[in-house]
Amino acid sequence: MTGAEPRQPAVELDVAVQAGEMRFRKPGDDVRTEATAGTTHVTRDSRRDGIPLRARPDVSYSDVRVSFRIAAWLDEPGDGGEA
Image (cartoon, rainbow, N blue to C red; front, side, top):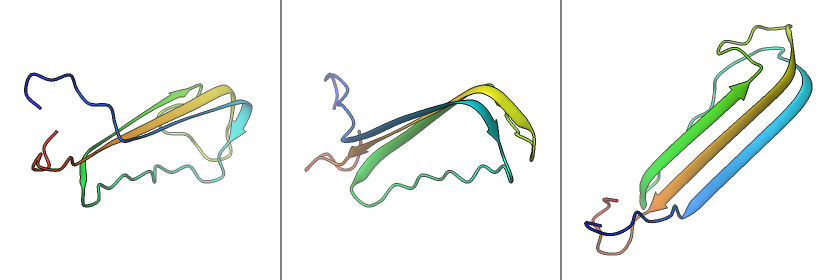
């Protein structure tokens, strides 16, 4: 795709959740993304407001917001799998 505008992702998912109070029983970071055959590129981005990087079990966090975005680009015929 030399000299062309970047293509839009074939699949996009944007999710956001907001809560007045949130408590974790067992915090973890088990989010995984895997590219399958025919996928050129996958990106993910997340943001947490009101929650520390390492949340602690049984601690209440107030006025929290969590957002997550994942996008995937698929191979185009003849593009050799490169975006």
